[in-house]
Amino acid sequence: MKNLSLLAFLILIFITSNSKVSSTETSAATPKKVHWDLVWQDEFDKEGAPDSTKWGYDVGGHGWGNNESQFYTVSRLENARVEKGKLIIEARKESYNGANYTSARLMSKHKGDFKYGRIVVRAKVPKGRGTWAAIWMLPTDWAYGNWPSSGEIDIMEHVGCTQNEIHGTVHTGAFNHLKGTQKGNSTIITDATTNFHDYIIEWDELKINFFIDGELYFTFDNKGQGPSEWPFDQRFHIILNIAIGGSWGGMNGIDNAIFPQKMEIDYVRVYQNLKIQNQIVN
Image 1 (tube, rainbow, N blue to C red):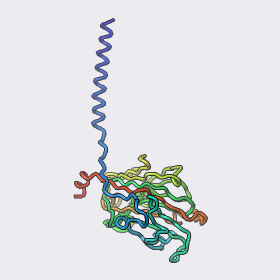
Image 2 (cartoon, rainbow, N blue to C red; image 1 turned 180 degrees about the vertical axis):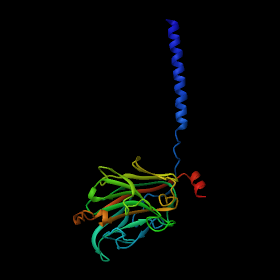
Image 3 (cartoon, rainbow, N blue to C red; image 1 turned 30 degrees about the vertical axis):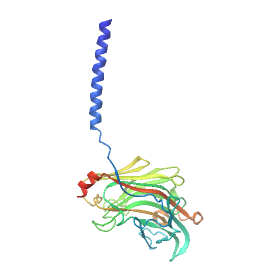
Image 4 (cartoon, helix red, strand yellow; image 1 turned 180 degrees about the horizontal axis):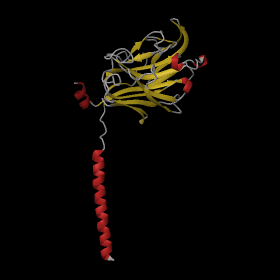
């Protein structure tokens, strides 16, 4: 009986030892987490107009390629302001420069331009039929030509006629909505219009991952087919806006009873791995 117990003990040690080796091998094979360095941010902690060192404005009411109904204003607190630690982008029902609605479209172009990184925007989106809120990126240099050839990264889009459905999408020369070939995915967040959520991309030379509150819901891979499919090897900048109406936002009309509507943004943070970034960029 003693010999049997000793044999069982030795077998147990052998199994345990092999298990530890296997675990070590698995751990070694698991990719290390990327170290992210904060390189650009706006915490919106100063009341009044948005920080002019970080944000400029796209201005106009020409439909913006989507038959949109708003006029984007410049430096107008009714449409863009920092209030109680939040950036407020407000769409209003009012006559302005020939349009029936006003809003704002802020951009970080030439104030915050990035090639690769982790972009995090914490936001609460507007609700109501006719609203079209977006957190997205366009190329700063348009190296491969006009849209869509140089690319577009839609970190988050929300249209009020399908409330709480969040979309993450990319557009390129080969993949875009004009051809019906755009690449993306959508997911439902039941409280997107009532609570804040982190809308995130992690972008490197191989892929763009899309997350909400840390949960991955879409990946777009670089398959090595050149800029018609992957123009995302250039600088891009961040855009924050609410459009009204348009080919998507207004597909079921505009409910004029909903206005004003706001997108509230708690922070915008951009991270890069500076050690790797310096090797890639330089």
